[in-house]
Image (cartoon, rainbow, N blue to C red; front, top):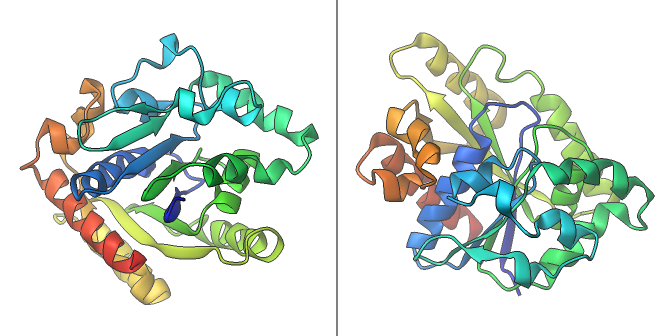
Length: 253
């Protein structure tokens, strides 16, 4: 049985959610953990970022959600370090509508993941708070929230925290916020530091000490279908995600 299921979630797009999911997973796998990444975003960026052609897939998470395929048949190993992927593509967009009429619609992903055996499962959620994200929050034990260090960073966080609270109340009482991770941090700007201070002030110990910098090597890695650990393990971005993986492990134990 899987030890930890973590939903990586922020309803704002472009905050480094997919980058965080892929690279955190990679370094957790490098630390001899058996890690599964679940691509729950119809854009399928996690799938292509891990080197899988989302256009040529015979079956995806969409088929698994509606019992047209078994998860174990769809999951594939994507690196030699024990990193696995449950892929997705644009087909998954239909699930938001189709799940509405399904019995226990919020529990579909949970039922799938409960049958799997990994040390850690990371769910890359879509940039919205629809049924797919609710499925992730119902299945997960922990939520990791990437926050971009930009002007409107804290806007929308209260809505996200409110939804987490509602899910905790109605569907998943043990759901915990693992923490918030600052992404695209630029030490040369006062804005990045201001956002960090604001986050520290409001959320204290919930904010990870590690910050993820703006980094060209990090940004270009997905175009090669590689994690930053494979693309450039000595880059600033790689060192940051390696440090984050250690922090996450510490918080989980």
